[in-house]
Image 1 (cartoon, rainbow, N blue to C red):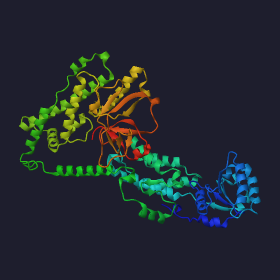
Image 2: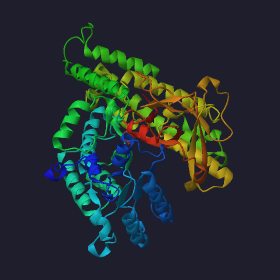
Image 3: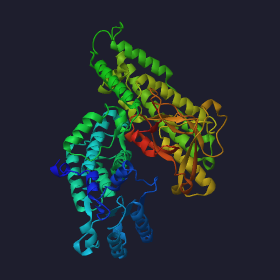
Length: 588
C-alpha cells in the first residue's frame, strides 16, 4: 500500500514529561484525528494528578476563558498543579500576556507545576501568531495523523462488502463486482486527501468511497444505503479518540506499523461469522440451506428423464405428468365473470378499493385462462390428439420437476415456491378474491401477499383518505402500526385505513412486549408479524424519531420484488438493522 502509511516512530510521552519542568512547558501541535491530551490525562492518573483530585485544570480557550486560565496558572504555580490550556491559537490578543505569565512562573514555582499547551499549526508563515518565546522555551510535540488506522478500517470495509455477497439477497439485493482495484484507488484517494487537508475530511471520504469508488457499482437504492451505513459506522472522528468496535470482539486497533497490524489481525480477529458483517447467525443458516437446496435441485435435474420409470416409482414420466395434470385440472378454479362483478357496483360508487379488486380479478383471469389452455393442450398431446410442441414439452418437464412453468410465471406474481406449493397458494388467492368481491366490503384483515400488485392496494389506502379529506395525494404517506392481535381476533375492518396480515420479518423479529423491532431468535429465520394497521397520513405528520425505514419485498429474492417502505419503531440505532439486512417479506 505504500511506506507512507507504515513508517514512523513514536516517542513515549512519559519521556517527554521527564524533560519538562515549571520553566519548560509542553507544547502540542495538533494534527487531524489526534488527541494528545489523552496521554497527559493517562500519565496524570499514574502520578495522581486528576480533576477528581482537584490538582488537574483543563481549560479550553475562547469566549472569555483567558481570565480563568490566568487564575488557574496563579493557583497551580503555588500549589504544584497541572494546567492544560487547549487551542491557544484562538486567543491571539492574549498570547503576549500568556508569554509573560509563563516567564513569571518559570522561577520560584512549585516543583510539580506543569503547563501543557495545544494549538493548531498555522496555515502559512504569514499567519503564524504563537510568540517565539513560548516556542523556544517549550518542548514541542507533534503526532502525525494516524493514517494507518484509517487505512486499516478501509481494508476491513473492503473485505466486508466483498464477502457479504455470499449471504445472497440478505447480504446484497444484487451481486456487485467489487474488486481489489476499488481498494487500490480508494487508498490513493485517502492518501491524497490526508496530505492536502489539516483535518480528516470524513464526509468527503465517505462520499467518495460510498457513492463513487464502491457506490459506482451499486444500482439498488437499499444497497446504496447499506454501503453508506457501513462507512458511517466505521469512519468517523470518534474512531481515533475512543475505543470502537468494528465487530463484536474486534476493536479498532491502536496506531501501529505494517507488522503491528498483521499481528493484531492474527491475534484479535474473531473466527469468521455473520457477526463480522453486522448480520445475525440466522443469515448463515439461510445461506447454507439455500446452497443445499440448490445442490439437491441440480442433482435431481441431472437424473435421466426419458427412462421407462420415474424415480423407481414403477410409472413412466408421461404417466406421472398425466396424474399431476388431471389433479390440477380438477382443482383449477373458475374464472371471474367480470361483467357480472362490475354490475354489482355502479361507476359512481366505485371506491379505490373496488377498483383494485377489479384489477386483481382481471389479472387472475389472465393467469387462470393460460393455465387452463396449456393444461388442455398438453392433455390432448399426451392422448395423441395433438402434436407435442416445444411449449408442451417444457410444460411437461416443469410438471415432472415440480417447477412453475415459465408461461405461468410470466403472467403471475414473483414466487420462489415449488409448483405444488405455488398451485395451493394460487387457489388460496382465488378464495380470498372471491370472498372480497362477493359484497366488495373490505376484509377484516387483508392478505397483502395475495395481490398481484400490492402497491395498488397501498396506494388505494392513500387515495381513499385523500378523497375524504381533500388532501393532495403526493403529500401523503402510509403510517404503519404493528398491533398485538392475530387474524382470528379481527371482527371487521377499521373506519380508516386497513388491517393487513401475512407479513414475515427476515433479519430480526417483532417484539410484541416492547412494540419494537428486536433481535432474532436463533433458528427462527422468518417469524410472522402480528396484524399490521395501515393508515394514510400527511407526510409532515410522519414520525421520524426512533424509526427504522424497513423495505417490504414480495419474496426472499428481494431486489426487483420491492413493494413499499414501512416505518417500524426501534430503540436501537437504525444502522443495526440496516447492516443486519432486516426487511419484511410477503412470502417465505
